[in-house]
Amino acid sequence: MLRILQVRDDAGAIKVVAWDGEGQARVVNGASSTYDLATQAIAASRTLSQQIDSLGLGAVVDLDQAAASNKIALPITHPDPAHFIVAGTGLTHLGSADGRDKMHKAAQAEEKPTDSMRMFLMGVEGGKPQPGQAGVQPEWFYKGNGSQLRATGEDLVSPAFALDGGEEPELAGIYMIGPDGTPFRLGFCLANEFSDHVTEKGNYLWLAHSKLRQAALGPELLVGDLPDHVEGRSRVLRGDKAIFEKPFLSGEANMSHTIANLEHHNFKYDIFRQPGDLHVHFFGTATLSFSEGIKTEPGDVFEISAAPFKLPLVNRLAVAADVPVTVKPL
Image (cartoon, rainbow, N blue to C red; front, side):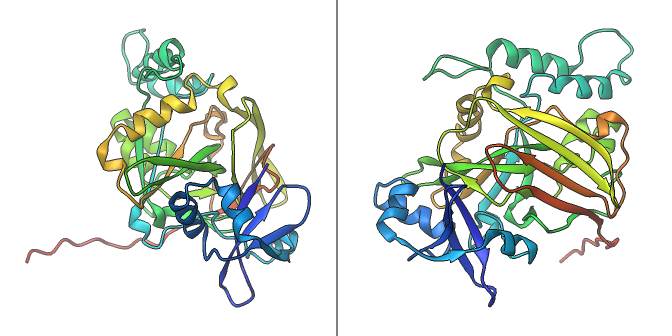
């Protein structure tokens, strides 16, 4: 499968790199960025693969060396990060409701399904409609814009006011809006949808606050169809010791919604179909170290890997300095 990466050269300039996951990775000629490559492909009515073939390949890139020297950048960026919308869906994976249900059960006096469990069951019942039809809408949340995204090797910085900084190992779709408002799926990335689960646990209506955090994307933009079954591993390392290690599952065989249904309910809104915008949409997970009682600390390292992705996503947890915010009248 074709993979597209962005790698910095010795001068810090971005090179677009094409790789099949097995042979040599090579620079794509005539493309200054993945965004530029996608813009060219849409204008020429070509797929990304066809556009790369038309441009040709140049110098070989040593990805192991690039990773070791922290030269692998985000697989795609927008020239104006404010036009890169970061959002996602939760309660989309089989088993994903268990942790959320336990989290919110204590806030309920009566023994009845929480809103989280009801949302999950709605997805199980109506999240996989026939092709061409719309199923039940999922939970949806906003995480910010492209300035929130971090590449592998970079720190995930939790705000000073946060109560927790926890990993969410999952997959994300990457999209570009064409000149006529058509959403184009460019591919899929390994992802860490970093969140504040303690804040969310305090009150479900604080979910929106808990999601306004940085997030990380893996090195590879995987072009083409996502396998129905994706199996990965999530680890939290503290020093040389793994304090959490557990497999996670994704792909439609392990989801209560189809990817097409999640895409429909995101892009049905006109505001998310603005020409030239990029979108990253997180598809959800059922595996959290927080659900296992892990309390992360600054310096902990999140390590996420999954086939068919060849390269892991690795980020260290850091905490930002406390910066007071003052609103001034004019």
